[in-house]
Image 1 (cartoon, rainbow, N blue to C red):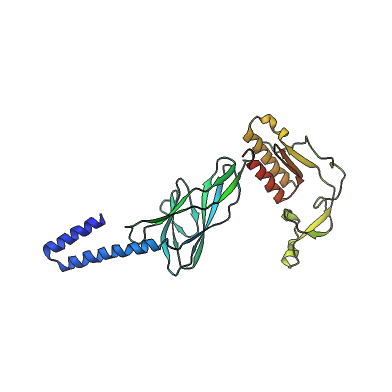
Image 2 (image 1 turned 180 degrees about the horizontal axis):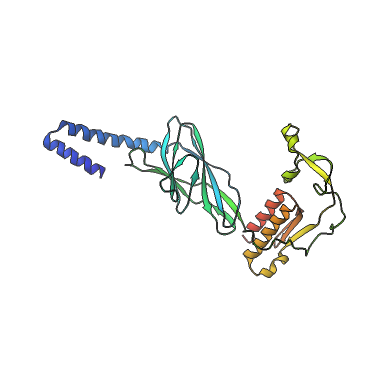
Length: 291
């Protein structure tokens, strides 16, 4: 359409021998030709890196993080990020239709975080589909695009559903009097070094603030029962996903109560333990069960 308008303007200028018509026609034509270079440069050299992706539970929305790095001396305007049937969230964005695309400007030497939400339906490992980035800046006459393929994925845990009462069918022999346990009682007995997976509730944050390192407070108490969460406890549900959801809920309940729990499902046995690291291992085993 733009070319047709220029052609009509050129014919009119030739017909009436109008010098101002010639000038306007060739000015608009040259601007269109120069805009090709500017449109191409909007994407040329743009660095795109994959960021962190936190695991989620089924039916939640996973947030795939991208980092956009504009290391050039020129700004990049009207970069459109689009994936079918998705919603985007980003810092400093402008969007005409946030359900299908976002438009962002990147200034020189700017690094911006982009989160691409992906709704989840079922457990397992989910991968981000292809994302398209394009620009039509400055005149909207030309379209420069690129496909972004990043090998990033995240785990989707089973949805925590069922009743919250922990099973009592299989407990270890240490139910009752036992050995001292970190955080088990109220009498403070000293410190020990931090280990990955320790509960943040037992960290001496004042010592950390003073630069004395990461130390764990120890208390004198009685060893709590070690609860086993087994497949036999959920076999009666007669539904694989319902059984995994019930085990998932029990893991969250046991962790919140500070219990020492283990997981025993077909093909995987995790000895009783506590802490965030143990929790993640148990949930990962449920997410990948049968895959």
